[in-house]
Length: 582
Image (cartoon, rainbow, N blue to C red; front, side, top):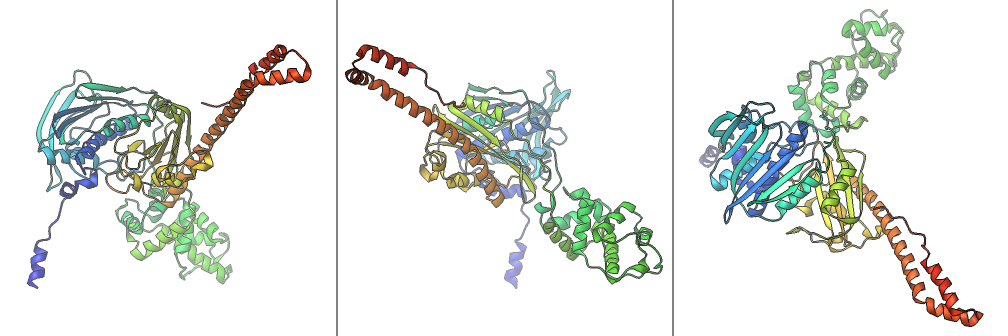
């Protein structure tokens, strides 16, 4: 007994900031090279996200300066909407605080962790605060913060604050931190790749005074993805029950129609019809028509009429005229209406479970897909041509699909016949081709083996498309394959956000997308090989032309020079060429 009391006295709450401080590898801070990469990635991802949401063409400066052997100063400046100075400490100094966690809309960040993790890592390795300038659009002032995180309380700690006049009407975020790290070419690779799938972005990368400028391919921003409500197929029972408890809707009908995507009045009636059991009710005036009886209680003409239609009961029949089966339909209609107008907070766990389970079985339309915004295939190919010159390019964007009630879309681009095979350092899976994985237009450069995209590519029968396979059954031909998975909720395997989980629906759609692009590549390879075969036959003909002319001359007694001249005319005629789209 004494021992158990001693143990219980040691139990204490751990803040989320303290948890991540001790488990920083979960956020991508596993080693010096990956840590420096992750810091830059989190800040740049946030900048692009903020600019797109504010309808601003992003211009992002990344400045990296080596201070000593293992320490770097990282500074990222954007031209985004900035952060309200009153909210900045919480936005950048408290874990699991953000605007995107509950929002179902395509964006790079969702968890409220990324930038805070970078600031925490800086604080952990150098004990120095983050230096942050911010100004919102049309702000007359620029606000400066020196910020740290109180790890025990998971609260921001403002070390210094000041204001200055905004003479140049600047807006955006300028954040600088010092971190322990090691530079690798993956940082430059990341910046090129995020530019590749966000070709409306300008990125300036300055490392120890040397600059790389990636200019915009287009000045046209992609269409703004719209926020959608959760779909019933995408939630669990516990979440459903919690939503019932915290909703501000006054009736179950308003809750189901208002809090979820694609649920209509008819869907609610059908769900309740399957969930509820009819209970006999006392009816005093049996001369009333069915509709008039229900209207006295519920007063909603349209809803009553639709409920009766779904239960198959004639609204104009008098109750006294109903047979036993019709009475049961009336009792069920009454029960359905009773529940539709019930306060959601009064729904018991048992009732909630029945309604929830029925929602999963009833056929409900897939969620809307205007919450997704793929890159225009033309701009994607234009950007690919700048970074990866090749013989042939193809880009396809599949129609949206759904997993667990979440809409998603797959975009695939292939550059075949690369002029130069520029490989990344420290490839996790060595291959003769270049494989580029993306999620919501941001590159995934680590944990390739664990990712659904890689597993799908390793399962492809490349010989079906005229392509040789090599290591790990990845293509051995000189080519690049880009796969971008777009969704309102990316199923990452860890907080490091580098690998996508293998849901069956996702695996199937990835396979179909890659195969669709490969069929176009196969057509190009086939036409190219046919053209090469025709050229080879002509070369053979030209090589033996003198001997053929001599033999014909002997057999026909015609002048050898004349025969040879005629054969040369035939050989020099332009043979029909195979059209090859480039």
